[in-house]
Image (tube, rainbow, N blue to C red):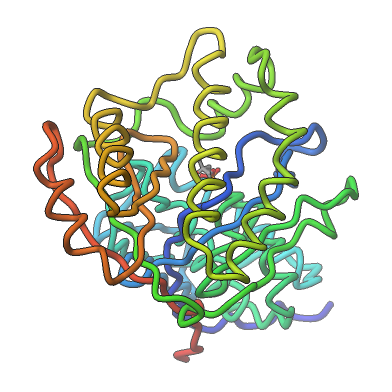
Length: 336
Ligand code: PMV
């Protein structure tokens, strides 16, 4: 019998991304494939990132931000290592791995920690296991850890295609434009502290099973993707902003109509959205999006971001406004 291949120590850095056209809902099929019901389009963020090291270990261990983790959180990481190991075609059982990850962003607060986290884990594990796959195929693996993670393998603007195949082989992400395509900025408007009340996987299942709007959400999303891609190509912020808000409102309407309802927003979320509408009438253009949490992310021209941030910081209930630029590709290096 061939002895198991040694594993290397590899370190990856992947940046968070925010969907401008949202992914919400899964296709029926093997749960492990994690097939999205709709495609999505995102902007990768500078600074907000996960750094992950995968190294040989006597047994599996996982530390996040310097603290050892067990239970469901660790299991998801080990299952993902298993996926990457199987993709390498190895017949032997996976050797133990030490995984250490640092999140330079708030974890599980609707700020896409799972996207950067699973993207970094996928890249680091693939390099540690000597798996030579191209990035689109690696994005398919990352998707199985977390749908949005597929988009964090590239910087700039990225599209994740829904695909049609039951095996998910055509459900891959692809880069559209690099970060310097367009001087946009995202203002992350914090409206609460702490983790979100319901995770995205449970929320998506509830939506598919009980929301009367789910089918309409799915039926209209391809059009949104194409409109957003055209607006990106033309660098037309008003057109892009219109699609960004449309996609967000449809996703949250779909969530709110579930039984029991899912309401991620708080009063400050709505106050920010209203403020943006009023500011646009003054000629200061920012467009809202929000994910599985109460924060608002505002897409705007870099040149307007300081003025907008100052105005939004004054909205009642806003805790903090952080400006983030489009970010770079994920990177990986083998350390030993
Ligand atoms: O990748 P997940 O399972 O965390 O789901 C992400 C869902 C949203 O953030 C709400 C939308 C998106 O496309 O990122």
